[in-house]
Image (cartoon, rainbow, N blue to C red; front, side):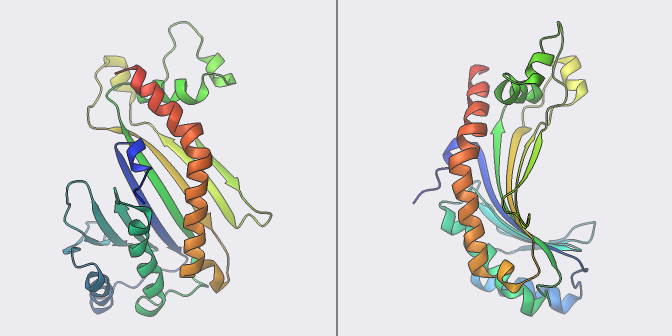
Length: 249
């Protein structure tokens, strides 16, 4: 099945983040062995480097706009895929990283603070991002009424919503809309052409049992994220945003 989410935006990303309490290992042999194991299964991931902040990165050479990456940070392991051809394709790397992290990096379920699955969507728009977000998501709210003040202009609209999805609050959903328009751009009416409006939707799981961080649990987490994207995020956030952008083009 083709990835229908990609057709609704200019770029679509699927990320997984394993957030740990303790620092992850940074020894040369451990790091290289970990990334070599990933490269063995994903042979196109050949670009290995270390950032100035000390993070280790393994990336795939970009084929158009499609590529994968794994980052090993101080207290977080990140794996992701840009513009995957289908959802199963995007999950394979994430499942491998979660599967080998306990054996190759010594990550215990006791050490994991949370596991995030994030779907990100970029919408290209050269103009006031805050204005688009305000019109698309706040026009019929109390915030919309506040914007009726004569000569007012939206300067900062980057809302974040976090919901607990169970009684224990161990499963959470977070939606963030990010504007990249600054004050100087609004004042001068000169907007950067390359900065997109971004939507981030995350399903986070927290718990101390092994069952929270197994490949099977990750699959359930990804399925929950897909369902909520289709049922809530696309009709309630993506549709209004894309309509507001289309009216300005």
